[in-house]
Image 1 (cartoon, rainbow, N blue to C red):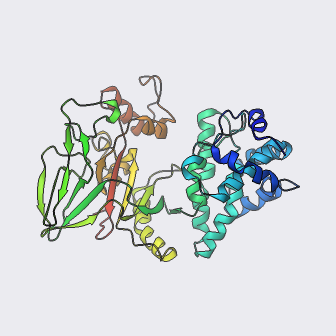
Image 2: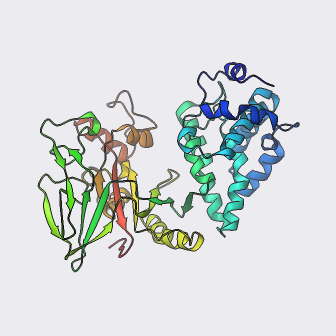
Image 3: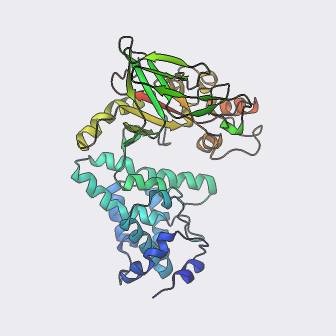
Length: 400
């Protein structure tokens, strides 16, 4: 029996998850005599044909699989990952799974191993193959992102791809969606006659005087206020969140005879994600949003109908409305959402637009309007950030 500690040490893995040790003996006892079939060239060709993988990612994947086949330690580690994943979905832990030293593409072996099971689940639900292929395009997308950042092929988004492989995330047109309970402490109420929407944090939030969560971008406010919320069956009282995503310092009271609750924490929602593989064309985004509820109703009839789209992204930072042209895709997309502030910083925005925050902002590339806007506002002392937002599905009027 191969020793767990010796194997980890020889692979350059200093700290391994507890689940690896827990399932190590089972994995060694069930290790195939000829090695895992998902490490073979024939398997890669089969999966590539099913998924319509672009040609440029096949050589680096084939080279990684060849190294794994030729090194029993890597083969046994790949099999261990498969056993652990099949035993229990470790979505939180898997984000921290370390790859062997010198093998930045190693985690793609597990993705490849799980693709047939994913596609089988899609077939059972009648999901079109083009949706499956579009959903799997995240693998080459993130491989290219890694290569652009580090100059070599790699993949460091295994924890994200688990949602795809588990049949939780689907790409419908331009956007990706996960059907889930609303994870944010945000409630919304709609006026029964006028149709206007009021949003509140249901849990207390410490907010700066500028309406953002205290601590956003590392900035605290000595005169911050606590946004509170109460509901007594006849009325609600709280600090409203403007459509642009700022908490107002003055509370309001609304009568439930006039206002109806339309969104609450835990309600079924479609969590929206925007893959970074092209222009965020406004019309394509609208077509996707309008098609998504019907997609989930058709293929997941047992799930409750979602009441809203929910999104957490740097693209909902309200500052872009003043930094970019009014007709830009980002600004037009923002207008569809009722935003709310979240505790965040500028690391994700810079990662998405610059592949990381430049050490010298003055000398950073200014080759697009978005890059210029991010640099200008940051240099002016108004750092970019992330925000959340929602679109109510009932009565949705995209584009109007």
